[in-house]
Amino acid sequence: MDQAKKEVILRVAKEIVGSKLVVFSKSTCGFCREAKEILTDMLGMNASAMRVVELDLIDNGSDIQQVLRMMTGIATVPNIFIGGKSVGGCSELKELKGKGVLHRLLCEASLQPLKPGDKIPNVQVQVLRSSKDGKLVAEQVESLKLFEGKTSVLFGVPAAYSPSCSERHLPSYIQHFDELKSKGVDQVFCISVNDAFVMKAWASSHDMDKRISFIADGNGELIEKMGLAQDSRKAGMGMRSRRFACIVRDGVVEYMAIDKPMQTDISLADRMIPHLSKL
Image (tube, rainbow, N blue to C red):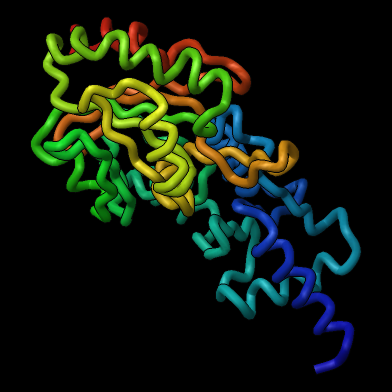
């Protein structure tokens, strides 16, 4: 294999690995346009995360298409990759959308959040609950089992100890806990991309009175699979959770509220209560 071809293969690999969603396209292709419109519509505010490589507008575009054919068996464009994996072209994309698989793939790539009707992903997390003697105890569990057979409210915070999380978000659920219970909520969980030690210390700094349980999603795996991860590297915080709250019944999301960046509003406890009455 000559050096030029190696460089093309390396370029393609970098595009695929470096983007959660990349579409190899041609600017004049109708099928490419249709595929990009489908993805743009589904991604909504996350549409900017879609990387589009127009092969007819760049050097070595034909060489890149040959490499893609070698990799995927697809000779034409578009050639679409989500989370580093090939999902095919336009017809395959439409088929995946029709089956609901495309939404799941976008969620797993943190490109689209769970919506009502979606099941909570099943990953290993640590949950902190109050024991009989009042001490917070960490337990390794499968996330889906936490929600089986119960009506739950799960709210996510970007960081334990941050001002908005400590002064507004968490206190709203402490304040309205009894009202949530009166509306049929069996349990309330707070989740953050923090380790169990940090979550335990944060929980201990508030008067939980055995009310709220804390999920330490240390690696952010659950948050990522829920499509609720946000890149906070510019703030020196790595990958974190978006601020959100959802109502979950027997493992299935029934209502989802996601705050805009830097806001603490629709995910507060008092904003969730009216939706419990509607469900």
